[in-house]
Image 1 (cartoon, rainbow, N blue to C red):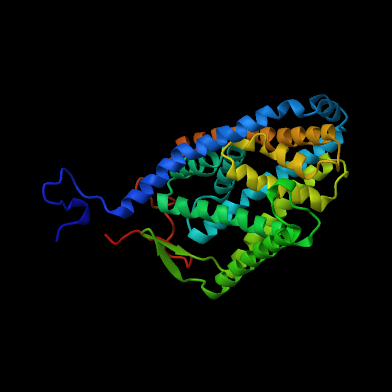
Image 2 (cartoon, helix red, strand yellow):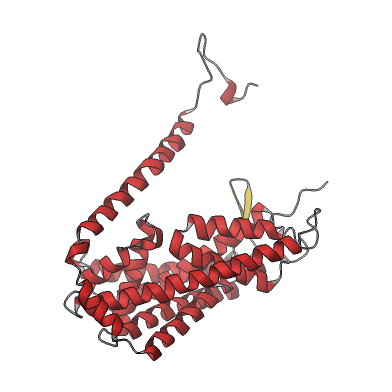
Length: 354
């Protein structure tokens, strides 16, 4: 039998490519050129509207902040980043690898800081992959850790956003072409998805699926509830930081809901750190509720305290992790901490028999 990719038609100059192979190549071309083009378009629109921002009022608002308020926001930002680090500890429990807990937490915190400022491909994926590879974990285990972290983050987002959107406290943006009923329906759908995840983990715990040659396994219901709890608390801390910076001029639920909308817009728009997207969403949703100068001042302070300052801490952690990896290289056989443990109940992708 001749493989499909080697089959030739009579007098054909080369191998015949199945139609299934053309679609992925087309998608890759669209992603390669379409996403950057969309990013440049959005960036151009943001720059063209930059002159309309009350920058003088924003600077005055920054100068009026009490040092105690800024210190409290920095403490909330630090707690949020530290809480995000626990997502990889969930991945450690699920995969059963034996890398030290402090190292897993430090890798997650470092990746999160770079993710916020440089984008998910650099921070969330590439940074994690490098640091875990330096620690001796195999690619399959790293992929599962990243998947668990992403699932934890967005499951908590769905639960919190669903509650906020369904409550009717936050109105949809005027340019979204989405009615209030549809907006509430979206919130209910997000809540149901979070509940469905917990139900699935309860019903199909231990069951494995094979996706692209790799086995996937749902965590237990207890772990699923932990994912929702930790991630929901993290999003709540982020909203609380912005609420303090706005001086209580906007209700907490409205502040949190706007942050949730801006976070999705920042992910969809391929601009590092969602530069300008966060500001655009807040200006669109809270226009008329709080002065533009006060709002822009709060957003600039939020970026400095939640994005830039933790990036300095993340860079320091990165250097420490690299130094530790150089001083403690993993065993070449991958024994102690190179691969996932195969004796525990959460073991996934065990090495093939020799």
